[in-house]
Image (cartoon, rainbow over all chains, first blue to last red; front, side, top):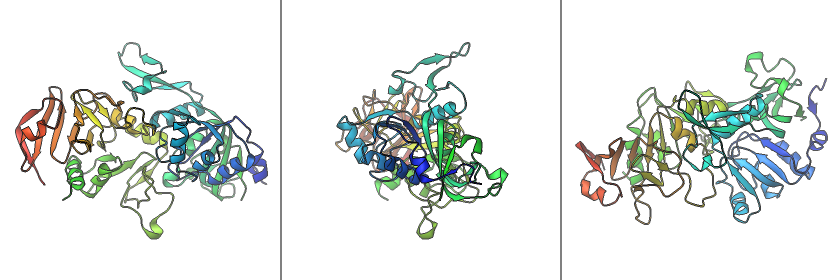
Length: 218
Length: 214
């Protein structure tokens, strides 16, 4: 019973030009590298990427930029990736910076059926530009409104997956991955280990399979 | 002790056992070498209990800090996702954060993520200065070209408004107070006037001015 386990060819067929792709991982750790190779092999271009950072030049997520597949990235930091910095300076990529905590909350909202979240992060800074400032009635407290973010496809790295799409993570490989699993129309998983149903352990599951559409076969 | 270690050692004196603390890259990251036992370190990518740098087989992908360095978890560690990590930051659960600084204003405004026109991004710095209970800037007193980093008003893009509590440099320690910048420690061999010459705002000299160890 394969359940949500899908072949590499089936996964590659999901990527199309112009899609928005959310990707887990931070600074090359906990990144769904096998799925990133699928994106490259699909030939899809003009992508919008949502991720915490842009990794290093031609490493992990950085390979998408190296192959010039990305028109825009929504992220908190690109400073480690010399290629993306050079592309931005040359006007070859659009970069939208969001404070890391706010970016993560926007994705959480996107996956939780919420329209956005109020935060004080970024008040009095350039982050205010283009954002609504909300004063909550009766409190006098001002916040920035950070709106929900979703994607066409979410790329998730997990330590373990079962055929129902239940996922378990390990240490800091978790990072952005459980949020991304919730906030895409199509959630794809690159798991280090494929387990039998019920083998992960009920209390060990970090992402319920209900969020997951396809797990890359080994 | 070299300048960078002197700054890190002094900044770490603000931590006490039981505190959970976030350290930025560079000099701030060196504070963990000088913290009292019982302090735990948080990293933005979802961990409390960051320990020493990993070597050999200890280096695994599952334990790396926000600067991409693999570490060994300490006893009692826990891992969580990025949303939880920043909930911990914004809600004041962290006792302190130590960050670098490009400019600090008289009123406690901090600019530390970019020079004008910079293209790297703010990472998690704006969340940290917004939520952590004590914001400590650890940096050299002046820029490499000798220009002051402690200024009347920041000209660089802000990380946060009125957010800095303490500034630790190789020559002095300054507290941000409602009355202005309070000079609380001066390096052995220097006078308050030596510090005043290198900053823009008028410093208030503490009545209990201490000597900073070399």
